[in-house]
Image 1 (cartoon, helix red, strand yellow):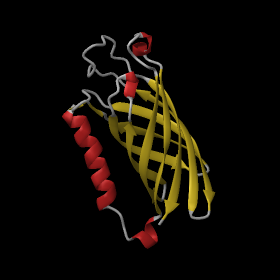
Image 2 (cartoon, helix red, strand yellow; image 1 turned 180 degrees about the vertical axis):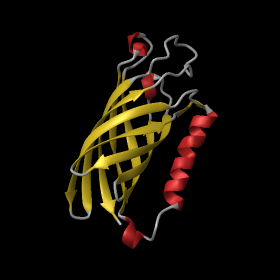
Image 3 (cartoon, helix red, strand yellow; image 1 turned 45 degrees about the vertical axis):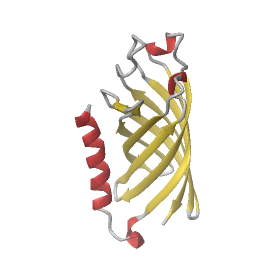
Length: 169
């Protein structure tokens, strides 16, 4: 559990530490909305709401062969539990207008870190509009966690759809 979180934190720290000055970096920051639909076996539990909406804050750094992205997501009512879920995430993305990539993240829920990180695949479209970019994407998350004491199922796999408005700086 802690080792997965450590990996995410180190990836984000290396991203920030390796940044050149903003004039040459190709950095952007943004915010957006994210819809999650649980597809794993936990969705069949009557105590679980398979739909959730989250809000993202995102930082993206351009590299010669792709982009690195660090996000923090806040889901105010995860799984219908009336508890907020916070998920730091790190992504490696390749492509331009149409892109794809992979990521890792972990959730903080009800005072505890989830016992396993999620791994995800993502595809999207980046529509550049001058200094503003609209990033629309879909992802599939692979995750298991026993963080929910009242629910026996631990398969939290989900499909997600999101949109982020980014501002270059």
